[in-house]
Length: 402
Image (cartoon, rainbow, N blue to C red):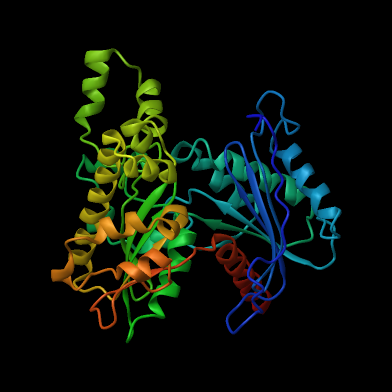
C-alpha cells in the first residue's frame, strides 16, 4: 500500500446489537483526531451507522493537506450515505481530546473559554491537542447550532490520589510545569472497567484493566474510580509498547546525551518511536513477533518475555494497590487477540487466585479463567467511540435539564 494513501473505511453496525438499557440514544458524530489522522464514527444507540479513518494528513501526495481538508473528505463520505454534517438527525458532536490536565476532569461542553483552555495545555500534548483543536474549530464553524462536547483522555484518571499521581521531584518545579501523573486511554479504561465490574460476584468491584495495543496502559479501578495507572505525564511511561520504551531509568537519557551526543529531540524519537518491541526485535506487530517466536527467533523471544514480564509486574503492583482483585480485563488489539500474551502475563500468579484456562484462552472466549477462580480473567473488546458518544449525550441531556 502506498504510504501516502488516504484510507476511508466504510461500515455500518458490526455487532447488530439493538440499543439496551443505559445505551446512548440519538445520533452522535464522534471525532478522534491524531497528529496525522482523523477517525470518525456516527453512533445511534449501540448501532454504528458509519465509521472510517483519514490517514497521513499533511504528508506528500495526500489529498488531505490539513485536518480541515480531512474533515472535508469525511463530510463527503458521510453525505454519500445521507449522514452528512448537515443532517437534521445529528444530535451532537463528541470530540476526543487527549490532554485535559487538571483543568478538565469530566466531559465538557465546548465554548470559546474551553477552546482557550485546551490551547493552554498544548505543551503537555504538542502532537495531539492541536489536531483536536483543528477539528473542533472546523465543526463549530460548520454546525454552530449543534452542542459539541470535549471528552478528555485523561479525565477518567483524575480520581487518582496524590500518592499515586505525584512524582518525587522538587514540588515548586512540578507544580509550575504541571509535572505529575495524568494517565491516558481513559475512555477505554472507563468502558472496559464498567463492563468488567458486571462480572464480579458483588459490588463494588476491584478491576485491573490492561489496554494492550501499539500503545499500552494498565489501570487499577476500585468501585468505578481509577486509583492508579501506568502512563504518566505523557504516554511514554509504563508498559512496554509497540515503539515506546515504557518505564526507564531517567539516567539513561543523560547517558545517551553524554556518551552518544544525542540531542533531546533525538532521544525523544529513540524512546517514543524506535524502542519497545520495535527496538527489541525489529517488529512492533505482535502477530509478527509471535510468529518469529514460534520459529525459534531469540530476539523475538526476548522481546515477548520483556513485554510479558512488565505486564506481570504491573498486575502484581495493582493487586497490592487494590488489596483484592475481582476481575482482570484484557482489551485492545493485543489484549483481545493474543492468547500467548495473556497466558504468559498471568503465569505464576496462581497464589493470588489468578489463572488462565488454556482451552478457553485458546478459543478466545470472553471469560478465560477456570470455573471457581478467585479472580475472573476476561477478554473485553473496547469501544472508545461508544464511550465518547455516551458521555457526549450525557452532557447534552444534563445541559438541557438545567
